Length: 342
Image 1 (cartoon, rainbow, N blue to C red):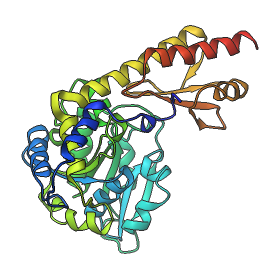
Image 2 (cartoon, one colour; image 1 turned 45 degrees about the vertical axis):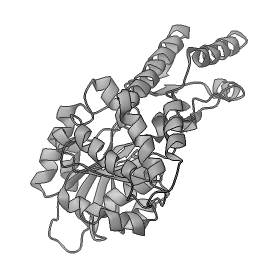
Image 3 (cartoon, rainbow, N blue to C red; image 1 turned 135 degrees about the vertical axis):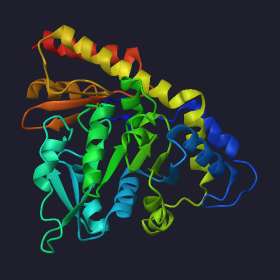
Image 4 (cartoon, rainbow, N blue to C red; image 1 turned 90 degrees about the vertical axis):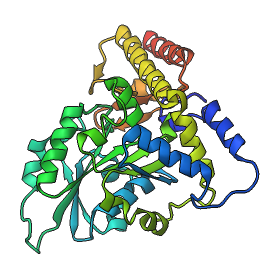
């Protein structure tokens, strides 16, 4: 099966798989007390800055929860876009495991601005209301849009005035960096991001998720939070070695650039066929487009993708590090063939 359903559907990049194989020798201490984990910490500081500390995790939801737990007490409020992953796709886990309230901010393009935040920042010090403490955003967003560095910096500066934190979900941070032609540091630490969920699972890794802290006070208790949240690997060398391979020779950037390019190609091919309505710009590796209900039904018989919004007949197509031009040509061939026989 070749899927446009999610970049989670792709396999493991051969370089990452080879790194796992090479690490699978002899014995080493567990829980991060190994040379692979030590080297990863050094590499992360090279890439993200000397204040960066990485805590590998099992999965993205776990990374988000651990990051948020570091920021909040149960009486706090977590602000997030209404289409954010923690609000829509994590089964209530952030509220359940942090105890803090989630406050959803309406947004049409998945991005949050300072002006959108202002109505939620009131009643500070009033014990009857949850206290706003952290803003969660995704880069790239769930809709495939991307924050410019200056947009993130403005959010961080505004939040810090209120002694709040900025948490970035970077499950597709590599795709954003590839589009912006920025380093990972330039769109995180340099912008004032306080804590980052940094992922590689969608971009060629096996189980490569992590939390990266940029503030000492957020790193202080993270190892306990990670353990308590059941996100601590025993054989952590096999996670660390994946990240090391991911960073080597800019594999993260090569993979993300390819996925982004395939999304652009797929969108152009769809646009050439007819006047389809694209609901968001394609800035990373995600396409949102409306098809007729009949066309969706017929296409799903041949290609896997998700219906993003059933009411508006909007589908989501996601390209991956291993998406090929042949995959795209097959999708376009099916689309043309169905339209020709309507």
